[in-house]
Length: 90
Image 1: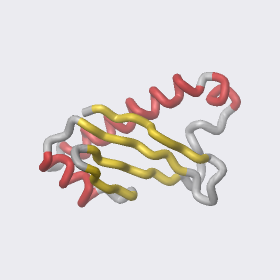
Image 2: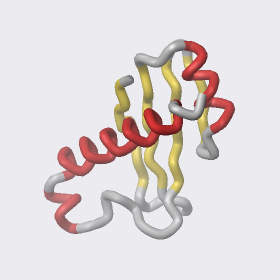
Image 3: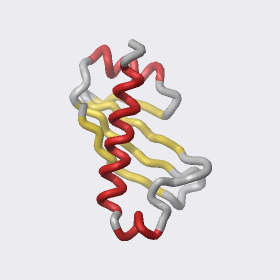
């Protein structure tokens, strides 16, 4: 599974991060699309996820603004771990 942050907006009314997830089997993609609470959609072999943040946005700190690539990579790893553990419930 490959998770990629494709977009984010910390200034939106409800801040969000968009992810593209590839490398999933069809049944895994269907399971995530049907069971995740986040906004999801499927485009071919890509699962798109939009995660909204109410309290703390991961890229809002001053260090995040300086080292944004590091924070994006960490967010991709965290989402990969979350989705992997979620798929264990299949």
